[in-house]
Image (cartoon, rainbow, N blue to C red; front, top):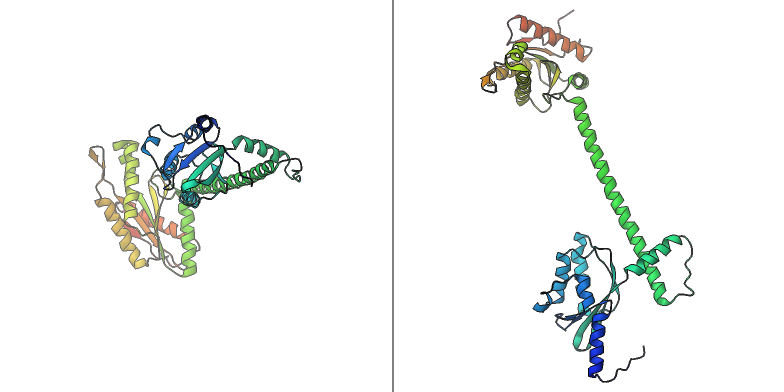
Length: 368
């Protein structure tokens, strides 16, 4: 490359260079050998949005970088920013003259160059090529799929065009990544909606127990599992004693409060594999899979006592809450879950007829 000869500096030359320093439309930063900022021009001050007092403190180049990071100027993902900044710092220390593309959050695109000056100083230039890129991108979009012809273009125009294609490809990749993230988010949201809908479809809105249809379905599943694994199964029918009187005395709000309290007490005495469901009104169904008949009766009796002994108040008044129960265990003659439920319901009827607040057992099917 031929060298440019410059006449010995005169006052006129120095004045002209000082004027050019301030009027050029690209940013310039002058660093000494220790990478301390010695001067910046007006274009860089505007470009980096530098505060007035920053340059008075004789900052290092890293301070300018920290200012850009603090003000979120770089369009770089947070997880990639440390690597990006280390690479930039290394290039400046090595005095690399290769141009580097910089993306800013406000949409501007810069070409950054670092040149080594005498005394190991560095001259950094920042050229805004946003307008050229927009024009080149529009041209690239119109001519997609067509062989590019650069016969009449200068080498600089060719480089700009290729840079625009690379920018368009990078933006397409970014859009694809954003689309992937949005799709994954939509899938996750749909799964959450499906879970909520499944809960709404299977749960009693008042008590949080299984609703009637899910209670019957769960009893069928427990019946089939017990048959296949040859395990025990006990179903318990539960009915709130004198529930109409509770509603009459405390209102429907008090009755609802009593039902929610009942489910909480029952659940506290059950295992994770057990379930409690509301069949309707004040009638509930409990399933005890894997519990032998001789143990199921004591579990049901313990639940009945827990309900009777658990204090329940509504407002400033206490509510006397007891339940009647009927329990039936799976027998070899039972053809379906309904057969077990029917025997448990018969035992419940006997408990109510015998004075309520008691448990009656029909743990085995009666011989035909």
